[in-house]
Length: 417
Image (tube, rainbow, N blue to C red):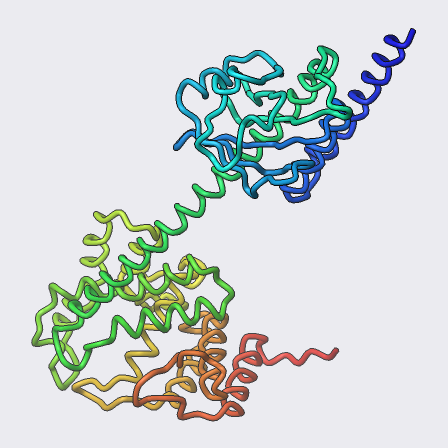
């Protein structure tokens, strides 16, 4: 009768431990805490006083503790390197087994920072034929031996715990892979930025009057994208597209850039063709940013259809193109040309607002005003408008321009709260 009662108590403890595993495995707590709770359940179900839960990685083959209890001197983490024979023995062991004496060395190495002789029972954690971890138990209450009932209970629990450990291992591997990909992506973006900056400088080398233009357009486009709430990847895309928007100008006659007067029809056509030529150039390149070709082709399109080369109206022009188009216009107006001097920032912003919404997207113009105002009040960590230009317009005047813009896009209607 005593045996039956003991078996019943053992079964009850096991069932309770299994019932507790469900919430542990599906909860949102940190894995180390989950591991401690799982180990506690195994100790309770088996009557063990000491135990360690290990995870396994195969390159190099190593057991690393994630939770331990009861041992007086257990390092954190406890590490046990494994030889191929140990990995094979653990992975092929069908369930928990008592260890001691010589057979300890069949499963565990003594080359780590913990003595395997401390363990009296091991339960390999496997998913299919793959080893994912190990439960190692020390002495039981009263120093009694582990019976087949305790081993059966432990075997039932480790079926669930193996899945939990495997899930955690997969999550860590995924997180590591994502982190590595992000680092690679960041290095790629860094490489692209550096390479494209050099390329932008080469594009603008045609004449002293346009040097730095492509770099500034990239910076302005990125700043406006940021003001519009774009994420970091989209902002990087805007910067790179700005660097490349005039790539077609590499085939334009250098003399046209230095002409002090207006271009004739043929000269204008040659200059305007840089959008089509540039589009042909970039279409053959696999960029990380899919919008680059259309930005190169359409950055001279205007909201009312008066631009070139395709005469598109605003609703046919993607937002990234609208941003680079305004960045290009802003820098062209505030830069000196052979036929005129540079226009001040204040006068340029006023003229852009006057031409909106006929020529430019009001939302993008508003983003330009936001960045200019940040410069005016000194809240931009890096000035949006750099160099000698600087903010030559007060914040209050920019606010007035913003109010004028809002009034225009509302068609002069007043709305009462």
